[in-house]
Image 1 (cartoon, one colour):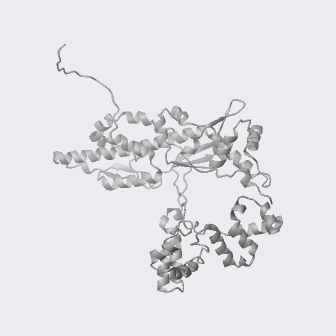
Image 2 (image 1 turned 30 degrees about the vertical axis):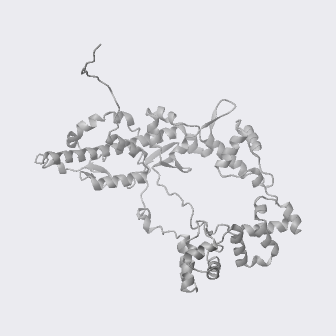
Image 3 (image 1 turned 45 degrees about the vertical axis):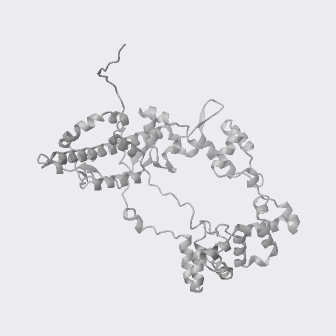
Length: 476
């Protein structure tokens, strides 16, 4: 059989991720603040995209801020036809007429800028440098003090040895030590210490408690015993009773082992909810957060003079028009999808919205995807970095998806509900006789009719930052 060349036609279907579709998928995953930044950037870069003017009622003049004008659709009709499956991929809005029923009027304070209401939080370094400049130290000592302050970690402890400080500052130990001692008595007292024992001893000395040798020795030599609650050897060694030791422990707990923690560490996360869920009579109202989101439309710049342009300029204009129209369409579809997902979550988790976390039911992405007839990947993307304001607080949208635990009667309960029940049991326990993980399992068996392994309880307890029963036990 000889070799020969042939030509043949083959018709196949293939999903191609166009740049427009990639942009639409990215919009799904963005949080509210990221979406605002993206829209503002597009307004700056695309000359054919503009913010619609609102009439006196606050609504855009066109009546539909996310839908281009009919005469503009001709230009990019072919482009949208190529991606016609995008409409089916995302689906349509469920009833959206209730979105604006409970919208509150923005007060003057809420409308002000964040910069006008919040001050910058001082850092530990700036706080200490401010005190250093106001101190009575010499200029040379202040230079050495800057090196010391620059060698502190976020907890306020000194991360360099005395020899290293001498090398950095080009000074002797006799010059560094008095400066270090002065900084250790700055606010917060105990900063620039090398160890927790030294930090607490500095605070004891500053308060005048160093006249008690028992207190000093407890902190200097037996801090680990106190942490591990090994009290009996200490009672015997210092000839103390429980009341005396309790007074020492109470005094030690008033000291701060991490003086710099209040200036550094993890900052709180401030979020802007993407959706608000309000309780209204016997139902719930879902309101999408569109605060600050411009109402976009195509402008009329291209209507005149398009025919007089060169082919290169006409191609550029048409490309920008297609990009603007696709952005408008993608934003509209994003809001539709988010509304439908939250609406389905509220339907599945009505007990949570009425009673709280303890009534959270098991839920997976497939349940929501089947309910709204979308793909699981779409639900996963739209629930990423989204927050919902509920009657019980602000929660991440993914919080409502949790695994199931089987009950004796064949029904299921959500893992988050079990965690909250474990936390409540530990909060109500006797400090002198704390509940063990095994005993918590027995109580859950009695109250919830659920069989849960001890190691599972330990895993949930650890995830919530709760110590074991031995460390929670108090002898007082």
